[in-house]
Length: 136
Ligand code: GTP
Ligand code: MG
Image (cartoon, rainbow, N blue to C red; front, side, top):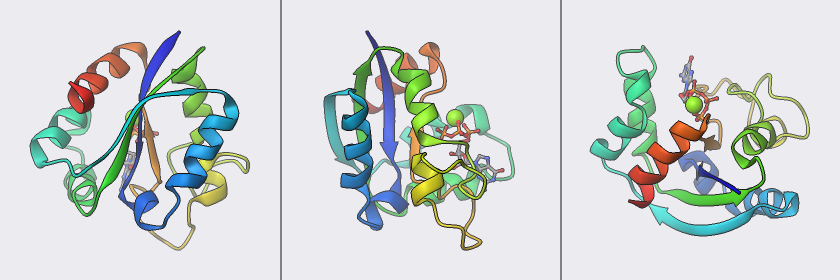
């Protein structure tokens, strides 16, 4: 069985949606292997978001991720990497499908798209790399 890194990002924690998001993850049948509240420093975030360095949204994204605590989850399950991405919905909550975390819970109030509640690793390689960063 596969593992992935899930983050409930600062907007999700601040809005009190951690429980609602965990309920969806658990209802799907995935297993929580490890979970913690974290306040990542810039170094962690620069590693985590290395693929986005230099893009226009990179600095605002890193700042946003330092704006409050996140919940980091080591999640296990059959095809959980692809499955959690499907549960999360597309990156922009404005267009994420109903039934997904971002589609149902993401706000469409003209907020920057980085406030999209969750992160999920996008491949086996990303999952291994990101789990190393957040859970060492
Ligand atoms: P993650 O699961 O968070 O990695 O989402 P993703 O894989 O759907 O998106 P991607 O890896 O391309 O981008 C990582 C994060 O950067 C997203 O979750 C957003 O928070 C933010 N982001 C991506 N594209 C944009 C953009 O065009 N504008 C802004 N402001 N933020 C973006
Ligand atoms: Mg991504």
